[in-house]
Image 1 (cartoon, rainbow, N blue to C red):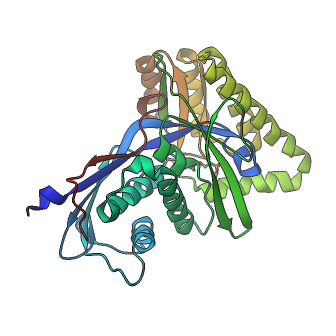
Image 2 (spheres, rainbow, N blue to C red):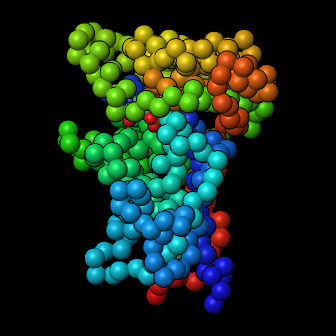
Length: 339
Ligand code: PMV
């Protein structure tokens, strides 16, 4: 049988946080959307394990290594695969490229073994990908990136069930600080002519460092927890505005959310420059993700003008509609690789 006949391809989208980063670490709700940019993995049987031509290495490919070992237990060694990864998600910029890799890879490996329709096991793929992320990040990862990449559309994460959203499942993780639980919900994506423009500063700031900055600010002044609660209120207001398709109010809430993040110390000069450049042509703008570098996001009806303004200020841009397709198994010839 030719190699192409047994190839399995899966893809999963990037994500961007619209509301609630950092506050979600303290139990407040956060809202993320699946972007148009995607990552694809293609598996074909081979003589030895490889990733894009190099041999599979637990240090260089921790997510893939974890998933292979999670899917096949010690006494059912899989036949080796050649893995090819492609796509248009920039790496290490807060857009969830490692989560998209974990989701697509988990689904492709699972499909190659079990021939399962992904919609039957979406919760299981979210769990596997979340655990692969946590394993690669010293046991700490929220399920925000992986659940948004797997489910697609608009995803709401909270420590409680949020009204007006479609509750999907509860996600749990044993972290070094104890067991953590999140409620995962979805919202219907919009049909409107409204766009997100992502501006990448090109500066890499590790999420763990940014999370530690907020923890230190709260420890130094515990009353600053009020700022975390304020982000939670803005996220709930932003959610209602999204449900009403009132994009002026969504943009306003994004800009308000940014002011609190800036005050908490997680913005940067580069992010501020890109946000200021975007504001005249957009409904609102903020940093997205951990901050300190990475990306900002603007909500706009005029993506070309907003993108040009951000690029003139030194950012590299991506344009996306709000809420795109989640995990997809793009080709599968219907035969498992291994019986
Ligand atoms: O680094 P990102 O873009 O995946 O975002 C991190 C979001 C935080 O709220 C800062 C951390 C977290 O685990 O939720």
